[in-house]
Length: 128
Image (cartoon, rainbow, N blue to C red):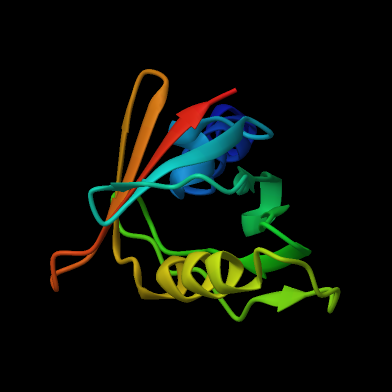
């Protein structure tokens, strides 16, 4: 009985393992957007998956935060909270943040992260 009691935390730890993209894409890896819908993304935009389901990054103008808690390979980022600074790349920022919220699938392959959805949209990131 004591052996069963002592092994319970080990069994429980297996069930509590992080199954989100954080575990597969690496916590605190900085991902930089290189393509949006098969078009080079020339503004700078980053994405970081943190422990606990937190997501953060730098859009072309503003820093942002969100949550992501669905299991890999699915992804659901939102709601996105961002600072409110204006800049010349505001159109690119809007496109970036809107696309992030529309992504539903994630694929990590080495230094490449691809987010996509059933509508055919795609975001390609590279690890810094």
